[in-house]
Structure formats: structure tokens, C-alpha cells
Amino acid sequence: MSEIYGPVFTLYFGTEPTVIVWGYDLVKKVLLDNGDDFLDRGTLPSTDKISNGLGVLVSNGERWLQIRRFSLTTLRNFGMGKKSIEEHIQEEAEYLMKALRATKGRPFNPTTLCSSATCNIISHILFADRFDYQDEDYIRMLKLLTEAFVLDSSYGGQLYYLIPKLMDFLPGPHKTLYKNVSHIEIFIARKIEEHEKTLDPSSVPRDFVDSFLLKMEQEKNNPKTEFTRENLMVTIADLFTAGTETTSTTLRYLLMVLTEHQAVQAKVHEEIDRVVGRERTPAMKDRPEMPYTEAVIHEIQRILDLVPLGLARRTRRDVELEGFTIPKGTTVYAVLGSALRDPKQFKTPYNSDPGHFLDENRNFKKNGADMPFSAGKRNCLGEGLARMELFLYTTTILQSFHVKHPPGVTHIDLTPKVSGFGQMPHEAELCFSPR
Image (cartoon, rainbow, N blue to C red; front, side, top):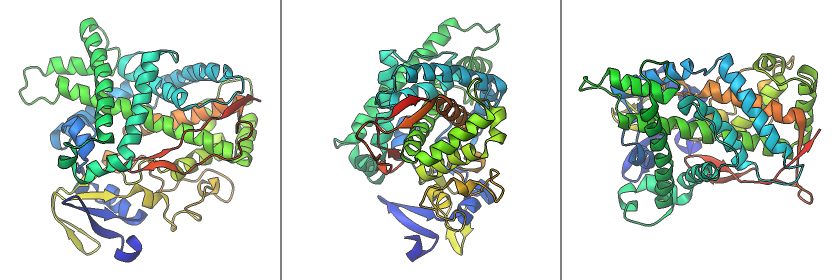
């Protein structure tokens, strides 16, 4: 549509006029250069129904400012971006490797295993806890979470974005979505209750939940406080779901792509063997010495384009953009996928090529249009953590395994299973053969 109407045009989501912004230059202008004008979160019907304007994902104004600032500080206090969380990811990678070895090279679907590995990292930060890969309740919750993302991106789920008030009275996948979310909310509520019973105000907080509960106590006499139990519930849900599903889906898709592109996998194997070897655990200190592996991870994230539209923004005042006046309060989508596939930024935007992130000397090359985590003040809180997990899990797996098609299979469908709020890949069985 941008080829017909230009890089700024209006669509109607139901009865709501929504401005679409296309191409890296204008996406950058909306998210970074003029980011404060587009800082508020726009309409996200299914998420709004679940969160009710609370938490860090869909809140606005002073509430968003306070909760985001607290969340960033607390996540860093519990290791995000630091050596301590790197060591924890390395420990979790050992559990992951043990589970992969147990498959003995037989075909299996790694979806739940990838979810378990990523979920245990955010669970460590939020709850000071990890879950066993064989815990049936834990596995069930992870499957509900994956299903919720698929449902939200399905045709029925997207219909809710167009006519939410009508869809509330009709059957459809959105009903299953909310049922799944309610089970996850029950799990989170139980974890908070456990913390409330065991919290020791005189001791150092054990995790994010403790820190939030202590902040609630500090502000209990402030009638305007944003640190309430309701905000705690939704903030934890925001961090838990985003910290689990997005990273695990990317890791799973990465393994599928490398299975399909054996020559690329062979080059990653070679770089791991040369830089890390087979004896020691891969570490973040290896990352600068592994430009090809880093380029592969970035390129697969670019091609996956997990949240193609990005999350809706809303103008805080009347804004001029490309000769158009966008009124205050208008929902705007700065389409991340249009930046990730901008032909001005990537030589072959619709084809996977790690060379997009390598310079003429085969060193890793950053690209401003590479924004799978969005950009600006409302970018993903856990970007640094996600990038660390992806690098360490990928290199640890490929250090020991050759990922192959099952016998008799020659092709994996890498096109999206559903494409809406998210582009969720198909599930596939893979074989992890020891190297």
C-alpha cells in the first residue's frame, strides 16, 4: 500500500483511524527523532482488555514513567546486562544441553524446551526461582503461553482488533486466548502470595517481586502511588510473557533456519571451534571475536520479524509528518517490518543473508534499521537480556550439536504459521546429533 499511497497513510481498524508509517527513515523519525511526540501507547484491544492500562506495556503518562523507571533499575539490580546473569544463563544452558543429549539424536519438537530455557532466566529475576523441565504444571503453562501468542496473531484474534466490542459477545479464538491468560495470571498471583508470606523487610530483596512489595510498603500512605498490587500483577505478567515467548520463539526459529541452511550452520560451527573450542563454555567475551555468528543471529531476527507492526503509539500533540497533520490522540503504527526489510538498508531485504551485517573485512556491522526490539524510550526493556540469551544458547547448542532434518525430511516450512500481532513460525521436529 505504501507504493500506492506513500510512506504515511491511514487505515481504519474498525471505526478508528490509524496512521501507518512505512520505511526506515520515517520509522526512525517517529520512534527516535521525534519520539516524545509519539511516546504514548496506542490502542491494543486484546492487550488493553487484559491489562486495563496497568503495568509497563500499555500504560501511559506518570504511571508508565514510574513503572518503567523502577523496572529498569530493578532488572539491572538483579543482573540484567551484568556478569551475574551471564553466569546464570550459562548454568541454564547446561540444563538445556542435558535435555538435548537425552534425545540421542532422535527427532523431537524443541518448542517447549526453548521456552523452558528462556523462561527460567526471567523467572530467576522475577521470582528467584527456576522450574524443572519435567514439571507438568510448568510445561502446561508454557504451552498455554505459546498458544496465546498464536491465537492473538490468528485471523480470529486480529478480528478482535477491528471490532472488539462486538467480538466480546461472539465465540472465537479470543475466548481461548483470555482463558489461557487467566491460567497464567493465577500462576503469577500464587508466586506473589508466596512472596508476601515469606518477605523479610529487614533483608536484601530476593528478586523483582520482593523489590516491588517493599516499594509498595514505602508508598502505602501515598494516595497517588502507582505501586499497587494490581500494577505488580500486570507488570510481572508483562515481563514474564515478553521475557519468555519472544526469545524462545526466536531461538526456535534460528535452529530451524540453520537446519534448512546447512552451509551457514557449518560456518558457525567453524567459528565456534576456532574461537571457543570444544572444551570450555561459550561466554559473552567471545562475542566480539565471532562476527559471523553474531551476523547470523541478527539476520535471522530480521527475517523472522516477530512483531512486524510494532506496538501501537499515540500522538501526544498535533504532529506534522511528511506534510500531513496527525491530530493529538491518533493511534500510529511505525511498522518495524518496513525498516527490517527496507531495500535502502538491506541489499536483498526479502532473502536471508548474514552479509547484511558484515562489512568488507567480514567484521560485524551494525545497521540502524535493525530494530526487532523497537527503538527509543519505549523499546523492549529486556533487549540486552534477550541478545545475551540468544548468543549464549546458540553457541552452546552448536558447540556440541549438529542440527539436522529428521530422516526422510528435506524441507522445513519457514513461512509464518500465523501473521498478525506476531509472526509465529510453524513448529517442526529437529534432530540434535552430537558433533
